Image 1 (cartoon, rainbow, N blue to C red):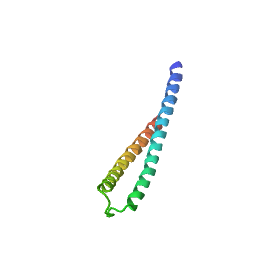
Image 2: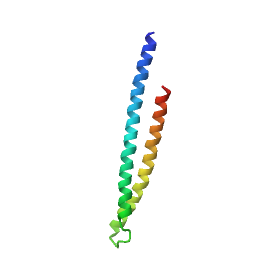
Image 3: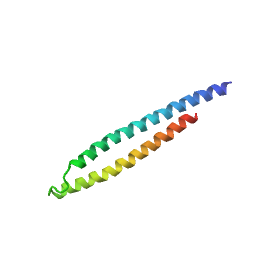
Image 4: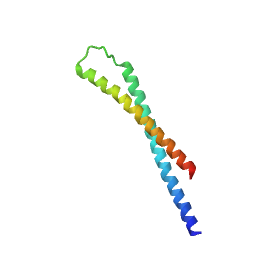
Length: 91
């Protein structure tokens, strides 16, 4: 009997930890989606052919690279969300 009590306590603690990680990854995915939307709006507004300095062109290239980083990060966070949802369901 004592073991089943410890097992339930361990399971509830594990579930709580999984839920905290799930919440974190959901939060990060949403934050990155918001940042990505702002970045995409900015990129759509910026004029690549403005005849500006090399620094301007380089900064736009850097922002284009950042777009890919956001896409990758969002996919990773969403994958983590799915993983922890499954782990919680299995408990």
